[in-house]
Structures are given as structure tokens and as C-alpha cells.
Length: 619
Figure: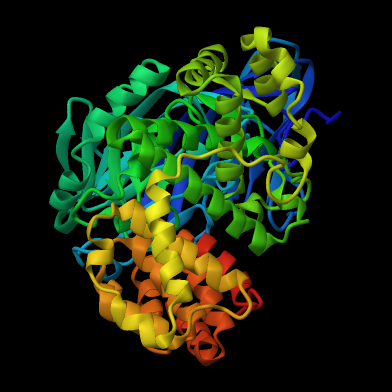
């Protein structure tokens, strides 16, 4: 972009001037749902520039100073997704390589998309309120005026004032606490992040939190009622870290803590440096969903250390992280389970392509996001299409032992930087210079810029999938007179990942075949055989309920409505709400349930489910 912008989702111009450090002072006000902030930005000019442009959204800008003197500023008209550009006049103008400090006093909005405020009644302990942030993809501008683009990475320090009795955590190293000198009823928590990060990884949580030590560099944090269960669930965190280090090198972030958030958290996990946020849907008592931790730990290298330059190259973060996650799980659980996960990932990708449409450009691995809210483009495509490309290249270029060497080399070369797909591709050719003839036969245009499924499907070891597919085939071919032949022994020797795959295959068949193979009688007998209504594993329960709704089993409606209200993970509630909407007998109740519960949901989730239920925003 000729104007100094490198990211269509940001107004900032990092080719002109870049942030090198942020210093934050935040005061969290639970009564007004406002964060009062002072941010000091340390910047360096990349070329001569008379002004600084920052991203903001729904912020009240009170004062701006530059070089310790008042600076004139203006807010441009608001864009519905991107917010308002804050333009600050620098006087005198900066010459190339000169530095400047800019300080901004501001307030957030009570309806900030980056922040969710919970009342005491919405928490486990029922005594204290709770606050947590979600800045990815472009919501940091709702919390801090900044260059809100992953092309800019900086260090930061922070001081956060909260009511006494509460704990503040951030995506940084904890650096002590002091009484608030301005208010004896408050405590100031201090943080420092010495490793450069993009704005989307700035994170804050405040609540009545406790911790348990789960490893030499790890604590798990949660409300009191959940913390011991969380400590059990994530007891293998250090082992996962060590396996990851053996694969791709030293962990540079010093500490690796986990915070189990309240149920409304919209994602499985968020890879905030030093403090991964995770959903409580992982707490199932058997460590069967620890793959999410493998995923978030992997982000410490791919996504956090090496970062996509803008959101069109998001697959560089998520595709590589899926690849590392599955390598880690393969080392810990066995290669056949890695292969099964890869097969399940391909099926997940097919589901996303179907939802978006096979010709939808948002199913490109590198989509054009000009004028598009990245939240609207969010799906499994960058995760699973990106993984499929890397898995295909692994097989093409010599196997996992060979290809992981490239991944480590990519991380070493681009550590602490933000990169594009062309940067990645150039390094791939450089690393495999003796195999360029193989790379020249890759359909790069098809992989990067064509919608729908990839041009090539990788090969898989189907040893664990075959048993699942045989059971799927039995169920699909069974007439109603044959349904009594199924029983608990069918699943007895299966790993939970196999049960997930089995249900996913049945769901896919139900959605794709005409007529659908499953009747109400089928799901009734499956419940009788396997008692899936009582399963606590959310991955299994989610697929089971979607299958029941697709089969039009009315008894599943209250179970699905309970699942969409007891937790807020978008991976589960969006497909469930779409399935409820498609089931005519469930539609009105689904809409009514959403309207009743939306005030307890994360604002990003509300925004997306509103679209899934074909409601207008005011509804």
C-alpha cells in the first residue's frame, strides 16, 4: 500500500513509523465497566513523517502529548469494523530514525468488543466480578490506542489497578504488586514483557483468582472452585513444553502459565504469551482434551515468535501450529493418533468449506480481506488447509524428520519478526534447494489463492480410522430391525479421538447423503447403546448433539439449548445454533434462548451468532 499501510485491517502506517515499546497504566472500574488508561508509546520513524496514525475503536481520547508537550489530534470518521483512525500531528516532524514518545490518556467503552465484564453472579465464586480481554484479531484498538496490526511487534510494561482482593494477570511476566498510592482500597499489579509481541497478544484478566504450581515454569490460574481440577487436567504441561523444545528449539518466554476462564470465553484457547487463556470446556477429568494445550504451547514459536504480517496470512500462524500440535501429540500418544487427527482435520475443513460455499474466496488459504472484518473470515480454513499444505509437503520432501528441520529453520530465521507467505515460500525453496524440482510441481496458485478444498489431498495412515469407518458403515446400512445389534462394546476399545472421528463421519454422511441415512429411531437406539447424552467430553457431546438435531430428534433440543448456554465456545455454539435454526421445531426456542442469554455471552460471540440465526444486530 503506497500510503505506508501494510495491513488492510489497520489504519496505521508502520512503513512510516513503528512502535518499539508500550508502557501502560490501567485502572479497572467494575462499577462503570470502563478501563481508564494512560499509554506511552515509544516510536521510531522508518522515514521522514509529520504525523502518527493509530487504530482506535470506541475509545474516548482525552489528551495527547508528544515530546512531553500537548499535541494536536483528530479522530477520523468511524468504519463499522475497523473503528476510527487517530491522527496525531508531530511537531516538529520526525526525520528517519528519530524517536518520539507519545502519551495518550483515554477511556474504553462499556461495550468494548475487546472486554467482557461479568457480574459476581456469572462467576463460580459468586462474590467478585470478573473481566477478561480478547484482542485477536483486531480488538486491541478497543482497549488501547495502538498500531493494531501484527506487522508491528513491541515490548511492553504495565501497571494495573484493581479492587483489593482481586488479582490481575496479563500476557507478560508478573513483576510484583503494591498498594495503590491513590486509593487504599485498590492494589496495583505490575508486569513486563521483554519479548516483542503484536498488539493482538496484549491480554488482561481480573478476577478472584488462585493458582497452583504445575511445573518448574508453569502455574495454572482459575477461580477457587475450578483450580484443583485444572491443575489435574494440565499436569503434563511441562512434558509438552519439553517435547516442543526438542522439535523446534528453546522456549524464550520464561514462564508458561494457563488461565482457565469463565464459560463465556469464545475460543478453545488464546495463545497470550506467558499466560495462555483456555476454555473450561477442557476440564473433563481425564486429560483427553489436552491437545488444546499442545496447540497453544506450539503458538509460542509459530504465531508469537514468528507472526503473520497481516491477517491474510493467518495460515502461517495456525497451519504451522496445527502441524506442531500434531507432531507433539504424535510423540506423546503415538503416530497413528497423529494420522487420525490429520484425517479429522481434513473432514473439519470440508465442513467449513461447505458452510462458506465452495467458491467463497474466504476459503482461500490467502484471502483478500480488504474491507472485511477478520472475525467474519474466521474458520478452520487457515488451520486445516494450512496444515494440509504442510502435511503434503512433509510427504513430498522426505517425511516428518526431514520437514520438522525446515520448520525449525523457518522459526530460527524469522524469530521476533512478522512475515508473509512469500517470505515463507522463499525460505522453503532456500532450505530445500536440492529439491526445487519437486517444489516446482506444487500447485502454489491452487493452494494459496483458489477457494474450496486443496488441489491435493495428503496420504494418511488409516489404521485407527478403519475401525471407526467399519462401525459407521454398520450404522448407515442398518435397518430399524438391526439396531438392537449395537452395544457399549462397539466403543469400548476406542480412544476418545476415535469416537470423535466416528461421530464426525456419521454427521458428515447425514449432511451429505440423500436421503439422510439416520432417522430418529437410529439416534434413539444409539443413545440406548452408547449413552452419549451423559458424556462429559465436549468434542464428543457437540458432534452427538449436532447428529441428533440433523436427524430431527426432538429430545435433543433441550440438551443442545443447555450446551449453548452453559459455555460460550464458538466452535460448539455456532454450529449448534445453526443446527437448531435448521430444525423447524427448534428454531423459535433457539432464537428465544439466544435473546435471553446474549447478555451473558462474549460480545464477539453475540455478533457472530446473530448472523447464524439470521437476526439483525438490534435483535
